View 1: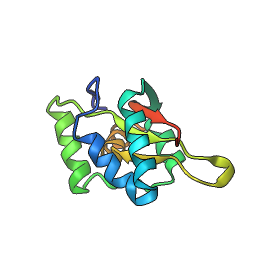
View 2: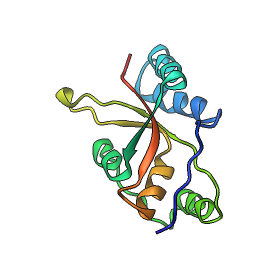
View 3: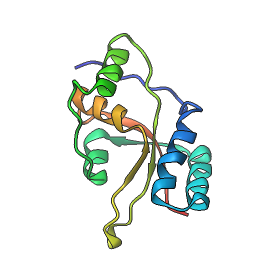
Length: 125
Protein backbone atom coordinates (compact mmCIF):
# COMPACT_ATOMS: atom_id res chain seq x y z
CA UNK A 1 0.00 0.00 0.00
CA UNK A 2 1.16 3.52 -0.71
CA UNK A 3 2.24 5.57 2.25
CA UNK A 4 -0.08 8.48 2.70
CA UNK A 5 1.28 11.86 3.58
CA UNK A 6 -0.66 14.81 4.86
CA UNK A 7 0.04 18.46 5.47
CA UNK A 8 -0.08 19.70 9.03
CA UNK A 9 -2.59 22.43 8.22
CA UNK A 10 -5.41 22.79 5.70
CA UNK A 11 -4.67 24.97 2.70
CA UNK A 12 -6.05 28.51 2.86
CA UNK A 13 -8.36 27.98 -0.12
CA UNK A 14 -10.02 25.02 1.66
CA UNK A 15 -11.86 27.32 4.07
CA UNK A 16 -13.66 29.49 1.48
CA UNK A 17 -14.49 26.31 -0.47
CA UNK A 18 -16.02 24.83 2.69
CA UNK A 19 -17.96 28.05 3.26
CA UNK A 20 -19.41 27.99 -0.24
CA UNK A 21 -20.57 24.40 0.19
CA UNK A 22 -21.94 24.95 3.69
CA UNK A 23 -23.86 28.04 2.52
CA UNK A 24 -25.92 25.70 0.33
CA UNK A 25 -27.00 23.78 3.44
CA UNK A 26 -27.24 26.53 6.05
CA UNK A 27 -27.70 30.26 6.31
CA UNK A 28 -24.72 32.45 5.40
CA UNK A 29 -24.26 33.25 9.10
CA UNK A 30 -24.26 29.58 10.14
CA UNK A 31 -21.89 28.67 7.30
CA UNK A 32 -19.52 31.49 8.28
CA UNK A 33 -19.62 30.37 11.92
CA UNK A 34 -18.73 26.81 10.87
CA UNK A 35 -15.81 28.04 8.78
CA UNK A 36 -14.55 30.19 11.64
CA UNK A 37 -14.76 27.19 13.98
CA UNK A 38 -12.99 24.97 11.43
CA UNK A 39 -10.17 27.50 11.06
CA UNK A 40 -9.44 27.43 14.80
CA UNK A 41 -10.21 23.76 15.54
CA UNK A 42 -7.55 21.31 16.58
CA UNK A 43 -6.65 18.54 14.18
CA UNK A 44 -8.03 15.11 15.00
CA UNK A 45 -7.55 11.82 13.17
CA UNK A 46 -10.30 9.56 11.87
CA UNK A 47 -10.18 6.47 9.66
CA UNK A 48 -11.17 6.85 6.02
CA UNK A 49 -13.75 4.07 6.31
CA UNK A 50 -15.40 5.71 9.33
CA UNK A 51 -15.62 9.10 7.65
CA UNK A 52 -17.22 7.51 4.60
CA UNK A 53 -19.73 5.59 6.72
CA UNK A 54 -20.65 8.58 8.88
CA UNK A 55 -21.09 10.88 5.90
CA UNK A 56 -23.22 8.45 3.92
CA UNK A 57 -21.45 9.60 0.75
CA UNK A 58 -20.65 7.09 -1.98
CA UNK A 59 -17.04 6.12 -2.51
CA UNK A 60 -15.88 7.73 -5.74
CA UNK A 61 -13.94 5.41 -8.05
CA UNK A 62 -10.18 5.70 -8.32
CA UNK A 63 -10.56 6.85 -11.93
CA UNK A 64 -12.62 9.89 -10.94
CA UNK A 65 -10.47 12.80 -12.23
CA UNK A 66 -10.17 14.50 -8.82
CA UNK A 67 -9.54 11.27 -6.91
CA UNK A 68 -6.99 10.18 -9.54
CA UNK A 69 -5.21 13.53 -9.20
CA UNK A 70 -4.91 13.04 -5.43
CA UNK A 71 -3.72 9.46 -5.87
CA UNK A 72 -1.03 10.65 -8.29
CA UNK A 73 0.02 13.37 -5.87
CA UNK A 74 0.47 10.79 -3.10
CA UNK A 75 2.40 8.46 -5.44
CA UNK A 76 4.79 11.35 -6.23
CA UNK A 77 5.28 12.02 -2.51
CA UNK A 78 2.94 15.01 -2.39
CA UNK A 79 1.11 16.07 0.72
CA UNK A 80 -2.68 16.13 0.92
CA UNK A 81 -4.53 18.83 2.82
CA UNK A 82 -6.45 17.77 5.97
CA UNK A 83 -10.20 17.53 5.50
CA UNK A 84 -12.86 19.80 6.98
CA UNK A 85 -15.83 18.13 8.64
CA UNK A 86 -18.99 19.23 10.42
CA UNK A 87 -20.39 16.71 12.88
CA UNK A 88 -23.84 15.36 12.06
CA UNK A 89 -26.70 14.93 14.47
CA UNK A 90 -27.64 11.28 14.70
CA UNK A 91 -30.83 12.00 16.64
CA UNK A 92 -32.18 14.04 13.72
CA UNK A 93 -30.77 11.81 10.98
CA UNK A 94 -28.24 14.40 9.78
CA UNK A 95 -25.05 12.74 8.52
CA UNK A 96 -21.51 13.98 8.94
CA UNK A 97 -20.90 16.82 6.48
CA UNK A 98 -17.70 16.80 4.44
CA UNK A 99 -17.29 20.54 4.04
CA UNK A 100 -14.05 20.13 2.10
CA UNK A 101 -11.96 17.11 1.16
CA UNK A 102 -14.38 14.53 -0.28
CA UNK A 103 -11.99 13.57 -3.08
CA UNK A 104 -9.05 13.34 -0.69
CA UNK A 105 -11.03 11.03 1.60
CA UNK A 106 -11.92 8.79 -1.35
CA UNK A 107 -8.29 8.71 -2.49
CA UNK A 108 -7.17 7.80 1.01
CA UNK A 109 -9.78 5.05 1.20
CA UNK A 110 -8.53 3.54 -2.06
CA UNK A 111 -5.00 3.47 -0.67
CA UNK A 112 -5.93 2.11 2.76
CA UNK A 113 -9.44 2.25 4.21
CA UNK A 114 -7.97 2.01 7.71
CA UNK A 115 -5.69 5.00 7.22
CA UNK A 116 -6.05 7.82 9.71
CA UNK A 117 -6.89 11.09 8.02
CA UNK A 118 -6.16 14.44 9.68
CA UNK A 119 -9.42 16.34 10.08
CA UNK A 120 -10.77 19.53 11.46
CA UNK A 121 -14.07 18.45 13.04
CA UNK A 122 -16.59 20.88 14.51
CA UNK A 123 -20.18 20.89 15.70
CA UNK A 124 -22.84 23.03 14.09
CA UNK A 125 -23.01 26.39 15.83
